[in-house]
Length: 244
Image 1: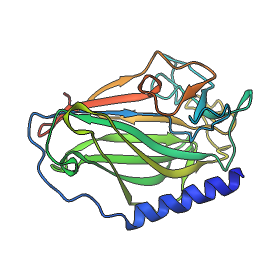
Image 2: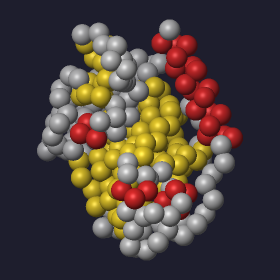
Image 3: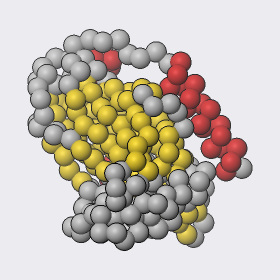
Image 4: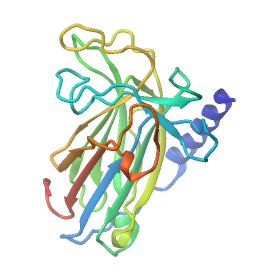
């Protein structure tokens, strides 16, 4: 059943990515404020039948060095039955909430993303997907989301986009972009294993105002969509370079 679900989601995601029209460019009004919340990138699993996708935070090494340091410390797995689980069929997503103070058309406040497969340089060699984000209306670079220990399902250079809800109303966006990978070659900079079983964790690089959620994430059960279970948050003002 899991294989069929992942296959179906992957096929649907590919059709959306390849054949959905990109939003038309339009100029967002300078001074409009924008926020985006990055939710769990692991797909999640409705293990308790409540209609929500649950996931586990299986590691939190806040403040330590290396790729499992403060910005990359939340190891995400699906919540299955009474335990946490991941395998090579576990989906990896770009899942967000977006909000703006603007009241123009939604396409003016879209955030364009282009994603690629990558590998960290020696001595790490960790596999990852990364997504570079740009303001749709002004083309300004807003930052990069990195999903470690995952492989993309689609060709390098594939575009996705996320929207902000107008007039300070949150709007969700969800793109299935890859699968967990058996990243056995991955090492931390100090030579210790950087992969300890199937999981994904997010790294962020942005000059915008950035915060890492350091509360509200339990070790075992979180849900995909509640704002309190976000991983990262970016904010900026339209028409201006970050930070904001």
